[in-house]
Length: 342
Image 1 (cartoon, one colour):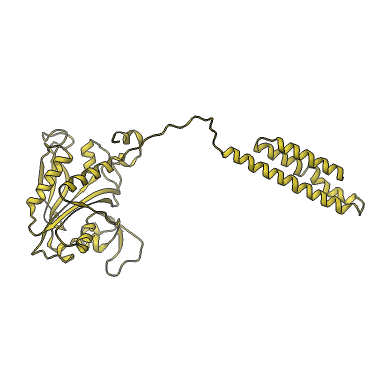
Image 2 (image 1 turned 90 degrees about the vertical axis):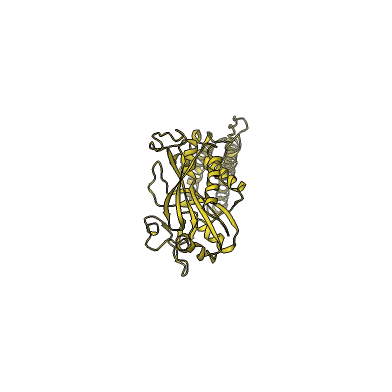
């Protein structure tokens, strides 16, 4: 028995040293430690030995089992480590140089234009409260935009003074927060993501980007707003771009207007893209409502201001001739490569 155990031990050592794959390790485990192996059956054979031989035989059997198990385990770890290593003989992968996303390019371009006009760029929080998203912006409780079908309310305990938490539906709350902390003169633009529960289609998304801009000082009027936006349109689109201001209504501005630019494809002559009107809508604007100024403790008798807001995706689609907003979020390389800045 003892001689056979020593022979098995030596055979196992030689076999384990020569293996080169994980599968061979598994085969050796079955051969030396499996249910039909000599070592598995040796336990029953010990009972037939003389009583004085049994302790030494049992001790040797257990020692051989542990030794073989340890050698197999060590060899398996070594082989696994080799398989996970880097094979320097394999060919390398080509390195792709990425570029800025088209929306990032447009945001940066718009912000640069307003910085040149004296505005500063600020960031705002994407999680807001009803106070900043609605109340301080003169949006009444019965306004449709405050309905759960038009706003992503968060399942968080409401603030006793500021109301429920939500994902901001526009970048305008940043206007309130900035005017609360700082006093005029102010000229700020705030780019960022906004969220509305719209059905996704070629022109709508539940997440998109806006740029909010506003200026407040003692003698600001609508002519200043027009001058700023005309310069913006000419620099972002072309020097020949014309702007049209149409009366509109927004709760946070009075008077309010929507702004159109002359169609980029037909130069205002009329085509299917502009529905033969010659104009394309790009943003909303107006003079900041006195109630908004009062909400941030700015006296509307002494200070006036204007504000505007635009959808970045809308600007990018017009600028680059893109017909489907979903392309911006598709991550298709062929689409994105068109906009990489060299």
